[in-house]
Image (cartoon, rainbow, N blue to C red; front, top):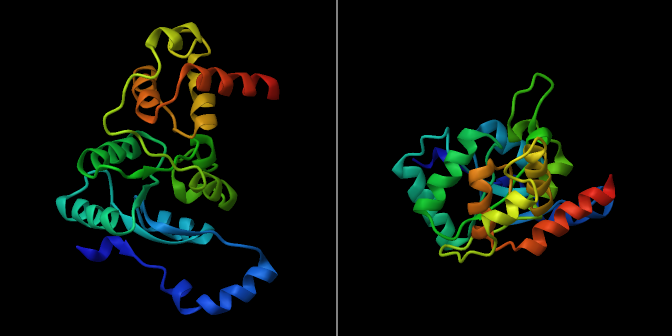
Amino acid sequence: MFNCLHFDNTYRFYKMRLTTLTLLEGYKMKINEFIVVEGRDDTQRVKSAVECDTIETNGSAINKDILDVIQNAQENRGVIVFTDPDFPGDKIRTTIRNHVPGVKHAYLDKEKAKNKRGKIGIEHANIKDIQEALMHVSSPFEESEETIDKSVLIDLGLIIGKDARYKREVLGRKLHIGHSNGKQLLKKLNAFGYTEDDVRKALFEKKKEN
């Protein structure tokens, strides 16, 4: 049951020495919450970017034992879900969110998690992108009110139109909510409490960058 838990014992043993290394090599983030990833390679990659403890789901079919571990972790130190930006990763997020209320989420853009052969996974991301993602965690409201209407998303070309998918990807990066299809976007924006002004600002900033 507890093979899914991976504690950063190296950090704890060398904690005093890291103070000196910080001055010489630069600061390495330490995350207090447990980070939920999919597998061992993800754990190794995340631990190379930040000091943390991880919980591995070992695939998208999460069993009750692992959910119990995640629940315990949430009650004691909190949990950040950091799964691959693909369908199985989204399935894991949904399962955890339904069973363990209040967990936080960190998202990585799909292009930043892709290797040269097109395979997607946290394990393929570079250190800086992982750190950036973990600096922008967010928590959806359990009982969210409607903060934005579907008609606004249609008007902004986020659901219908030739550039709709691209605009959704831009919005996902800017608001740190991950990738979404047209149906998921409205639900996700309301869950995180984003308003029409937030969405317009994010799209406008991208337009200015271009």
